[in-house]
Length: 412
Image 1 (cartoon, rainbow, N blue to C red):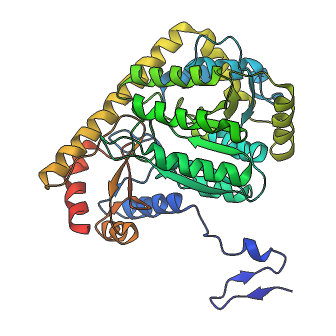
Image 2 (cartoon, helix red, strand yellow):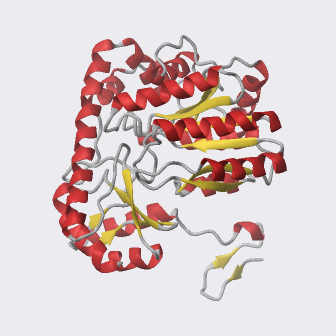
Image 3 (cartoon, rainbow, N blue to C red):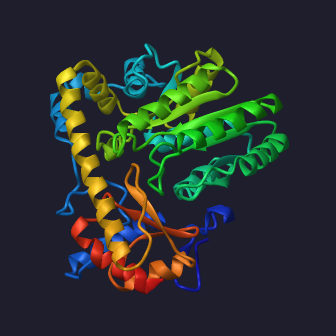
């Protein structure tokens, strides 16, 4: 029998009670939709909620090199099923983007974007009810990914700019989880952290790895690098240094090190929905079989067309060079937006924002929801997060930063 709630909405008894109280849309997408509706009505709107790269006309950036390759795909590179665990050539090409000295992807599978990789890591490395450890603040959908897979998120704080990471606090939190669970899964969104736009310093990175090194005798530890924004960095050499540090740590063999990879931001193929969960420094038949079983049981196959494109790109040196130029251009654009925002904030007697890479920066707010609400009343849309506001540099035009900074100041 159908029922209606007090507000007149239909309620199905068939739906489990635990599944009835979710918001109708993802909070970030809902804010973006509201901003777009108000802009379509002719209102002046600054939309800093977007998680996709926009040009100064508000149009989605689509990398020309990628689209040229996409148009070259043949029917047989698009239509057939990909292998359940993904095309090995695709997985190898994805790994070699970041660790070019490797000749094989190790162990891994293709997934529906980086989100799929994160979800599969919970399925295979945590028992129901256990916790994944990550930096705070963090990308909000981490909570959803954890909850939908029977887990929860616990955190250790990213240090303030110029401050050292609190290795003792990290040690205590990680040890507590490891002792309680008998295992530890760490999601480390570094370099180019979302939502702060910062990366760990070499010393901070060394401190994190040393904590994991000291704790590994207590139980199995998995370190998963969430690498979504590496192509958009102020210092590409620093990014490569970080990746080599993680590779050296992986080769010690004390901690299982893997990576969540995606073509969404890397190749501006957001809608293609393909990524990878890879463990480049291990070849383990049991792990490979487990990942393939997860793929089959959840989504069966990741899309073939974007995998084919990545394989084509890996074989085309000229296309790689053109793509590198495009990435450099948009990294410089993001850097300019970050500098413009910092200058505008300082004009309002507020601290600037450090940016080292990625699509976002974070501004402090004692009451993020209230501050975001006041900004929205002024036509400025941001994403409230614990203790702050996530600002999408990827969609914030440099010429809008003075208006943004004034509205932010008046909304605090």
